[in-house]
Image (tube, rainbow, N blue to C red; front, top):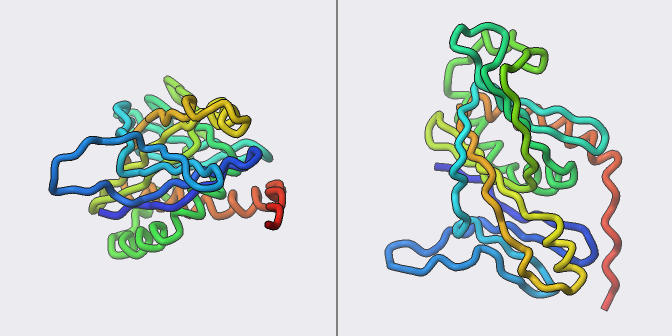
Length: 224
């Protein structure tokens, strides 16, 4: 099994969220602690090994990205049983552009490379190249906001677990109102194939490049 891991920086004032991939200790009984701890310089540390897995599960046949300046949506969709050019359901996960660059993209570089190496050992699905799911209609749509994720695959089965750290909690923390609002909410687990996940990550490269042209630079840290 392979997982992405790394750190994400939140820029409001001095708040920095570091999402760590260290697994919790195994092989002995233990109490699962809060996944969020506050580190030096008011860093917000999130231990992925202590996160609760999302209970909402979505089975996706297709995955793609849509981007406009300042707006990013990850779409996942389930094809109709008739295999026509429409979807039974379509899930939109709205993702902050800065999060897409600083977390999903930057922390998945090793995972992305290993995933491509694995997929290249399998036959290519030529029919998939002819589909353009962005132009299909859906019988039902649903939308959620997320701002960080955990990617994993075991064989050809892939999962994307999406979470939300509420902006209001981060804002209150940076203003000195305490850490009570820093509660991670599991949003949804998307299950798909490694082939579709690779397509999604490959397509993200151009989106990330476009975002980086306008993403504001973080303020310089004062020297000590």
